[in-house]
Image 1 (cartoon, rainbow, N blue to C red):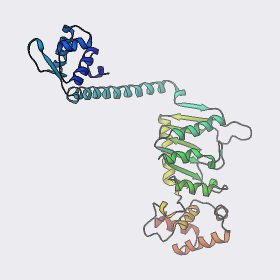
Image 2 (cartoon, rainbow, N blue to C red; image 1 turned 60 degrees about the horizontal axis):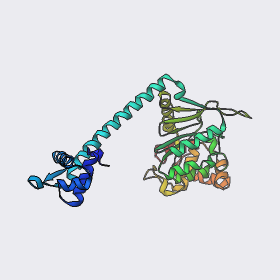
Image 3 (cartoon, one colour; image 1 turned 45 degrees about the vertical axis):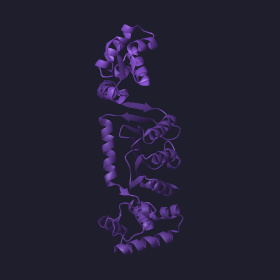
Image 4 (tube, rainbow, N blue to C red; image 1 turned 90 degrees about the horizontal axis):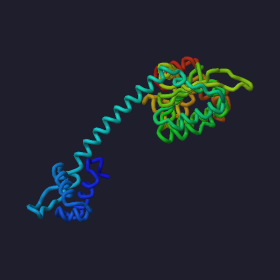
Amino acid sequence: MLQAAGLNEVEEQAYRLLVRAGEAEVADLAEELGITTEAAATALASMRDVGLAREVGDGGGRRFAPVAPEVALGPTLVRRQESIDRARQAVEQLTEEYRANLRRGSADRLIEVLPSRAALREQVRHLQDSAREEVMYFCRAGHVVMPSTDNTEELEALGRGVSYRVIYERALLEEPGMVANVAYGIKLGEQARAVRSLPVRMMIADRATALLPLVQHAGGMTEPTAALVRGSSLLEALIALFEAQWERATPIRSLEDGQVIDASPACPLDADELYLLSLLVAGVPEKSIASQLGLSLRTVQRRVYHLMRLAGAQTRMQLAWHAARERWL
């Protein structure tokens, strides 16, 4: 067990006996270990030279006592651990170089084609289950694998502390149940934004793997195909695409006051009004907002008119411009 500290089997046994006994003569150690006196003397001399034992007697009755383990073995183990850590770092660097060379030499290690809906669904779930830091999502209207409301993996990942940044296509927010679903995700920590349209469906996990369909509009009985893209310049381009869309997208605020994190301190709107405003600016029609929130169209229109009066706006475009200028969103 102590071989990592540089002891052979006889020296380890002798040191353990010394620790238990406090001190002992060479002959006694030899008898206890079942070895010759010469072998015991050799082991003790070696232990003394490396600082494991000290001599406390003279002549033929020489006695040896152990040096405290933390003093005798601690520094050696620390040095060995440092050496192991350096070796591990070197192995990791060599492994990355090895994988990079493999990727350069074989395109199928960079891009894996998923030929079916089942394979795509499995990867959507696997990437979220294995994510540790961040998931970035492009959510387009309609669904290829499963409805957003069935994505329970996101809720579990949010519970583990994984960051989610999701950009929704405006048409998706008009689908039944989506406004409530998005609001619930925001309450759990999701950062949500909306744009008029997205160029592709896409998920990126931990900036290490991207998943996106290869055929955007497969219909009927056609099985969708998708690409799993690993570390490469192509992956970096997909990450840059997401960041560019994120910058131009409109934030969607939560219904609860505690979740309104970017509102200006001088903003006169409460949480419900901010949520309504964010949906309006994202381009969701009033009729869809009314249906999603369980309100009458007249109630929604009255609240929109109230927002316009607060902003001093005559049109919804002016309302959006005023909200942007005053940093209400």
